[in-house]
Amino acid sequence: RKLKTEPIHNFKAVLLGEGCVGKTSLVLRYMEDKFNSQNLSTLQASFVSKIIIMPDQRQALLNIWDTAGQERFHALGPIYYRGSDGALLVYDITDHNSFLKVKLWVRELKEMLGNDICLIIVGNKIDLDEQRVVDYDVAFEYAQSVGARYLETSAKNNEGVTELFELLTQLILEQQ
Ligand code: GDP
Ligand code: MG
Image (cartoon, rainbow, N blue to C red; front, side):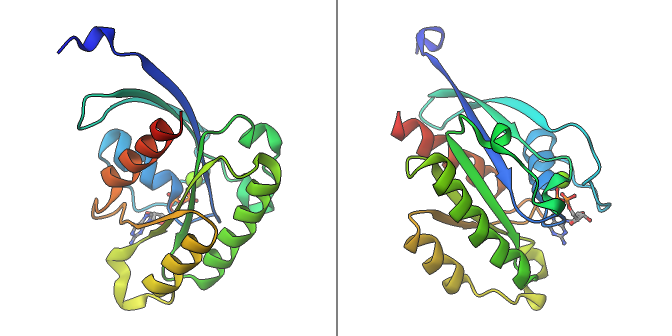
């Protein structure tokens, strides 16, 4: 295959969700295959890029914007979302309030960016399934109702994480 002749698409995706749901942990797991049990919300590094090579050899440069904790104040302005091709809306399956927050972000994103943006709702921390308070079916049906995809992950146990970033890339590539 003449890989060098394949164009590399350059995409922007934002991570949204309440503090402590595991947004930074998902990025760290995917980018560096690491997990840190401490709270990472004060890390300043909020922009990471990775070349993703899909199973079918298509390539994309995915630029992921993570927050440096400003989500606590719901103070992420339009500069954060502007030009996004996709958004990952993350909640913690053991925290019902974090699921309600996802609904607020979905409304805000659709208002700001219209309906073209690829949305994936992510139920994280499935390693804590005994403490689950948001049913899979409830989240799945909500996602369908707003035209989003739904996936569950554990950044801790590395479940669903590669699938998540590959699905994001695939949805964005399909939309081009
Ligand atoms: P953020 O504020 O959304 O970026 O969340 P962080 O990535 O900083 O994670 C907040 C806390 O949740 C940290 O203590 C993480 O170790 C923990 N955490 C993140 N993902 C998981 C997970 O999949 N399972 C469990 N059990 N803990 C997680
Ligand atoms: Mg964070």
